[in-house]
Picture 1 (cartoon, rainbow, N blue to C red):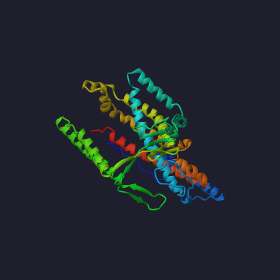
Picture 2 (picture 1 turned 180 degrees about the vertical axis):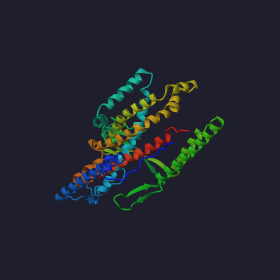
Picture 3 (picture 1 turned 45 degrees about the vertical axis):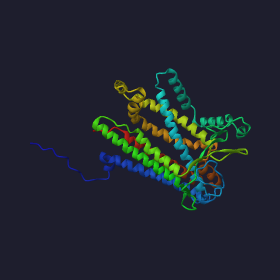
Length: 420
């Protein structure tokens, strides 16, 4: 009887790192990593030496110096005597504002147009195709500038409201002008006040207790609504009958929210024409609106194609089975097709969200002061700290992009099919 045994292991030799297939790949990877690190080290050393020769040693102390410039659209209190750090924080919030508004609007537009592209109505599907091809094949910068030009040239000037050539909309509460849109602002006659965070530091900001109370009530109502849904799901699973809970779910969200608004004395502050411009209310500048609309319409065209591809990826037998059960086409789309298409839609959708966020850096073309316009624009020009400002700018966009990717990947993981 012959017994097969493993060949005897020889003593390890240095030559085996190159000639033995068990070690060769690891050896090559280690050598490549060492070479890459040496290259990075040489670049950093060379850069530091050149900066030292110019008398510009790397330092971030300039962030504590007074900025000396104004920011027209802002979510925080700011004046020209504040530091570059606070100016950068205001610009960062402006970037996040455009990113959030753009992602939400582009998603709504993309889903609607993507479904319409599959419409059996020839006119509807062709018009949707024209929109998609028109926006996808023109650079987004041109759309931003074009939208800004339309807002400036076609909308009435504030003085037109004084002469009667133009009038306010929505029961004299909204003024649409070539300087921006003025909308009512939320005011509270029995306000709870504000909480001051970080004292007098450059990153100070105030948190409204009224807003916190409303958010707490809203989140609590949503959580209770989820419990109602889970209970209805359990009853349906056990008995086959689903109880009607939509009115309860809507009530636990809306009623407490309206009650808190009444307790706080909620009312609206309307814009009024005083002098040569409107005063009061909330002012949405043309730069913000143009950037928001252009990015939303441009990205929405790409999302529409993603949605169309995701719907086409779902087997036609699914819609036929839903029709055989008596579901109407709109219910079939919302309950059967789209939930399955999401598993195909989400991954490329993440890339479009990231592109929209990074494309918001084109805001400087229309004068919207985002993080690129503040930190990467005026601050860099005033301080001459190109390396430091660009590194900070890269870090900011990297953090935002990784955060969006993480959230969307978590959602994608939650909706994917589970194997039994």
